[in-house]
Image 1 (cartoon, protein in one colour):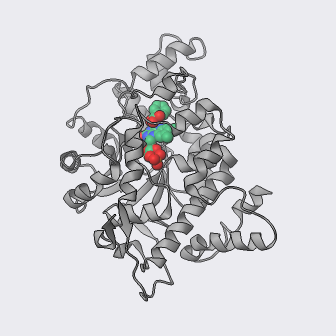
Image 2 (spheres, rainbow, N blue to C red):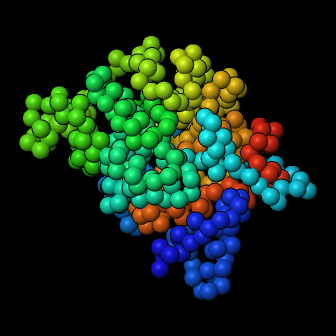
Image 3 (cartoon, rainbow, N blue to C red):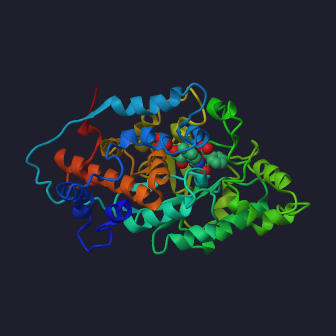
Length: 402
Ligand SMILES: Cc1cc2nc3c(=O)[nH]c(=O)nc-3n(C[C@H](O)[C@H](O)[C@H](O)COP(=O)(O)O)c2cc1C
Ligand SMILES: O=C(O)C(=O)c1ccccc1
């Protein structure tokens, strides 16, 4: 049964590093018994695998990018332009991927990127993702556009670390209410996404007239929010369409400013990270505004078609603000080697996006767990074989330009 296979040994008391690389042994042992892994171990092949199980609309939505897809491709090309230079006889047999972020130890420098509307790929949606992430001790960053409520996902994540992603509402009461709910439900860090104040031109969704948001797949947080409901002339139960439109309107607009970040700073006493930073000066402004971190990201190439590959922006930003801010990275991470490259170029940790969503589509909680364990195992093995015991010894000198 795939479930048994994918979940074996997660809770066993084994050293963290052994547990990550140990997934390979587990797969070999199952292989001896004649069992193949339930999902592919080639993390770059997940999209093709998911294509067989997702609806064309959902696949298009998840896999698609903005415009011609140039930035999505640039994200991958940016990784390909860096190559790892392995070192020998460095005593890297015992590895430790532990990473401290905002005073908390994570088992590895990997988080689950905020991805909304997860019910379009699997009925268990964010609850399955939360369980898989919690089982490995990795933070899931819950999206404001989730298919499940802040409170339900908190419960599903049990003792696991919780972060919350904010699409910054225009209305102050709604903003305070959502942020307050996240705080109360035990989310410890706030990730404010700045690059999606309106959705980009996404042909694959436009051609299908497919907007999961409007189809009520990503409104659980809105419809359960008392401050939002108080603004509506009729309840969402009476007039769903109107409620959806008002929710979308809540995030659309350009009236946000660097000064207004002070409002969020006042509302949230934990770490705040700005997601979607691609320019060194914006990273500096984030630090000046009292933020605690940035996520260098182009939203997986889903917003500005023609924007630079996200990894190209990383070294300059890490160099400029790495001593003042936690610099995280996403967009295009697919393999353990990719994680290593981003860490070497200055990221403190990376966010994984589409790959775990494909895992969710393929096998719910087990699928997400398989993707995460595969990524961590590959990272652990690649790090060791490149000659490093921990991410601490990684630096740009570990890489060369292809
Ligand atoms: C289907 C989908 C939905 C997403 N929803 C959100 C969201 O609600 N909030 C957000 O900040 N980013 C969202 N993102 C962007 C991811 O957080 C992340 O930046 C991106 O997926 C990273 O690139 P990758 O998919 O190449 O790893 C979404 C991405 C996808 C693919
Ligand atoms: O699709 C996205 O990239 C995204 O960020 C989003 C925005 C609104 C609802 C769901 C996802």
